[in-house]
Image 1: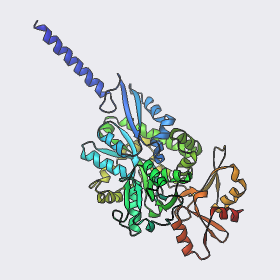
Image 2: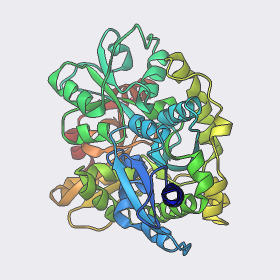
Image 3: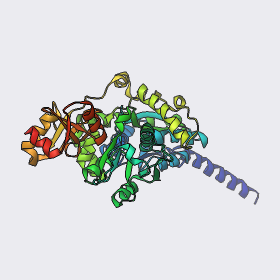
Image 4: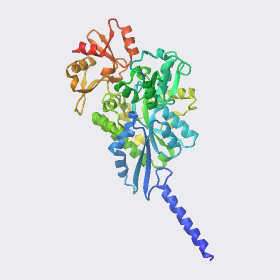
Length: 452
């Protein structure tokens, strides 16, 4: 009789010990199956500036391959969780349920603030894609809208996602236009898809959103550009954030992820058309829209390096979020942690750190082609389109002022002598006309005719 409690106590102790061992095998707080470590990755499949840490990376299987190559005696299971924005990824990270996530610059700052506030600190460990002028965010209006400049937004309803980089662009742009971003417009805080529907229904006069929504709506004929975010001339980017406790516990796993991200980046840069097709298949987005942002000369440049100019821009973003009462002070220097990506990329890191985006170039994607054709000027591209239009899948031209790539048939065209110049937004085209004698705005059809 007296020995039974002892047996039960011993059994309970052994069971508790086994549970502790199993719990230690999890990539996060949860236990794995036997010796399996689960790594949970949060990503945004349709925010295609993050594809090298999400959609494309997942389709290529590089992370799983890097984990299998660790040879540390563990088996690994990767769980991919897809979200529309960065906010739910941050919520899951601070709950200890996501280990690695990717999101835009403004959500990254909220990620940092929430992590610190809730005792689950996170760190920015790499960049996915960036645009040094801010061209990833665009304000669009309905196709038949009479609005032609930011000043026309005064008193109007504008949809955006509060706390996103697109909201940051809207706030900054309105201030430059002399409009109070809080009182001068009626701001509608909506998810991108909801905002797109609101614009189509006429319940929103304009929509400020991030990649790939503006390009998608323009491509579908559901919107036209009102403001090119690159006019701000302030970098925007998306990046990878990791929980501090996860990074310290599983540094080799985080390095494996960053190596895989670098591989996916190399694949995208070497095979931009194939990469666009893969992302399109996974997301349902038109490949032509994906290529607008992620192509060889797209709006986004992909590079994992934590460039100083991007970190500097992040510091400038803090004041916008503080003014909106979405965060307090954020210690950006403490949030940025490049040790893992430096180790993952080795000697190539310094090269990537100093690399510059490729120059903006006009491109044509012909049907059934696995690569695009480039042209020395937009005028030459138009000349080609005038005689080969039926065989063209998509044509892209860089804004003559900002360099932001846009669809040739959606651009605002200016004729100046024999030169034809494309612009994303009507206001930038008009500014050019006002400062160049003899220049005039022409329709796309007139531009094609002039180039033929």
